[in-house]
Length: 337
Image (cartoon, rainbow, N blue to C red; front, side, top):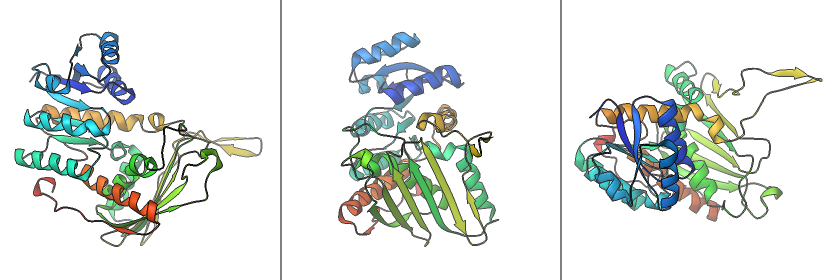
């Protein structure tokens, strides 16, 4: 393998293009050599913009190419399995944007294929683990200074979502999944039960079930709450606080300064997810590139992708029924520690 990892990108929509920009202009160690997309004209436009990129007619052809050492999957969720399995068969490391797959069965097929290889080749794109504030939150928990975590409160607020394109299911399956992942990661535990309660409807979202509150009981007894509000208006606001035996720790505001003027004080709220987590996106992909150059993977695993899908599916059932839903998962393979 050359000094630079040769990366083939499947899917050249918004997130795919953002990763291509990141690999080309921000990070060292990798180069995009191939792209494919169901919209061939879009893939061709991206290839033209960056130069030196070959456009393939299919994901299979891209994966099989000698011009590709590793695969970055940025297509829509239902197409992930059909890209990941051939990449595993070819022994090529994979970075897959969330979700790993859109069904538990597909996730388990991917896990089975990776387990048969005997080593990890997949990293899933849950980038909050690479955010500096979340990393400090986890380090504080692990230091023991606040004692055993008892409750975790998470808040995920979007300024707005596009009417007609954002559906009720997406509040859990597309938005809350990040909070599910970071809850499991921070607490080092799996979810045992989930309940989802709808709040008073935000009139801005019209018929959308918004906001919602998720309540997760972890196997070890810790309780986590997740507020998802997707038409909050003022900005993209991510919050988190651990309440523990001997103290608390929470994410701080992301401003470097606080403005005080006119009998008030204020700070800026990020406009969207790209602004809030831009550094985390850089770090997660840099981590993947380095691991892939060594022929492996680190970060969120295929097992994490499966576990999040299980909890997400249960969350959707809980949202519809208004009742708690128990989490039932397959046995965790030794590969995932």
